[in-house]
Length: 342
Image (cartoon, rainbow, N blue to C red; front, side, top):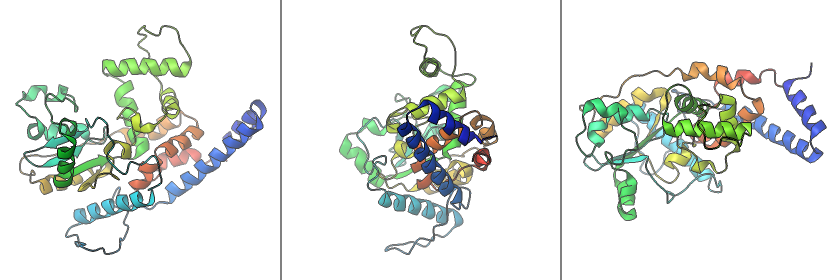
């Protein structure tokens, strides 16, 4: 029996013009090369590659394992940024747009950039009393949005010159997560189980667009997209830098090539990284970041096996900068889906 790739190619070749078939094959070849490249990256310490960077002027020898980890991560990002000067997807300066994910603490002189689905909710809960600009009842904490500008001070509220000065002088940090895992986590959070009216409406809109149903445009159907439909919708969207923050690439959310962050946390090691950052901020006696575990990694194969392999490759291309900038490789459970592909 022909492989899945061959069946797909033969069907395209019979029903589409030759030039489309050729373009199809070329895109798959590029995807395979990307898959191979990402699969061959060697990662250590649960998310940080050991780069053995050269000694630079002003180099400070790390005094602990966590300090070395941070040094390696920041070095990887700086190196990638230098090598991607001509990549139009990468912002090498902070863009002029709403920065509602940059939360400022003037008192403690730090800025956290939230990347949704990387532990941002845990950070909000942990730092609530530190970041809230007025007293709020503890019983209401869980119901307050990360992006409530009536409670938190966001970078956008400050004049441009002042906000740049803050970025230059305050301690700054953000967290990242393996892209496929983060995308699935966002889907399950917004379109499976309880959600908000905003995402109920967005889910219905995705269903209409993907299924090609133009009827009932203003009627609520209550239907939600499958993961296949959600990822089909994602790959059809233009300009990923303008996407909803829950599935926008991390590098287009916190702009690490435009901001020289002091600390970069990884979801895989969230507790250890958070404890280190809190200590550096001088808040380790006031704040305790919770230990938590995500079920998403064990669900990767279940969900990604529901979508075409060609789409997985296209999603990898969309999130390519996140994979390379932060040193991630394909999860083993997703790589296994390709074993009989050709």
